[in-house]
Length: 376
Image (cartoon, rainbow, N blue to C red; front, top):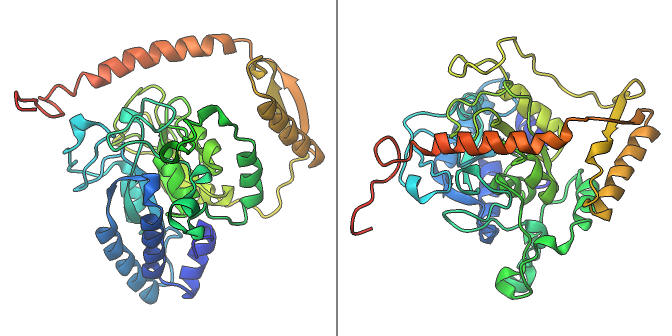
């Protein structure tokens, strides 16, 4: 059951071959089995069990339910959750309990998803390794020797129909982020800042997870952990209730284990939100991907400016391999130029510094955050 994708799990629930309660119990058991990965800041197993029980009843009584009904998901701890503390992995918000749900969270709840907990991250989403956290670093399941520590051979990352691609990508990981050879630090980082959500999917704790992406905080950990990570176009998903880092660039993101599942999540979450004026007002139509996709009319450009002299050989080889796969499938692949690329980091740095400074000003002990005393 843990090896199934979101789409496959939803089919089992619809056909009555498994119940939402059984799926939830399996995921919670898995989470406890791999708790040393430090995925969660706040676990909500009790409420998840109730949500799963309610979903089980709905599946017995109704024929038309949303595909996410009964599906276990996790939420990055930057999204506000009513009645559940939202820390943004910072001590200053460690006791903050929002009175409302972020729009993305509410849409998951409305569609019957089962929320397992709030995932670990870099403090205020400002990091790229998921190591600067209130509760310590998230550990990558592809490089954490459970078997040597606890004789638990089943604690390795979940393998499924996407395994071949995952295995290939993970074999290319080098020791750049390897801390040292001692037992307590013999692990890889997950990328960040949404590392907890990425690991939750990679380790089989949930079928999908929410993250947020400003300058790579979904795409980066998705790559490190061998899962699918999507940063949608700005304005497609609502930012209401997402604690901001850089308002001009923040976007809610999606983690799943295959592209079909990402399309399902995007269809469930996208659309205009009157609480977020930056969301696109045009109606969004959910879609499913066909089994066979014809890419013979697709023209793929590879920007020459991205061939940095500092790119590793493994990265360049992977890039070439993907380009060859696209060409073999009938797509046209050619080199293009994005001449303003050198200015992108400069623009990002200016926006990031100024907007972070503005956003952090609210944690003054008056608006948000803890007011320190002499005893603290």
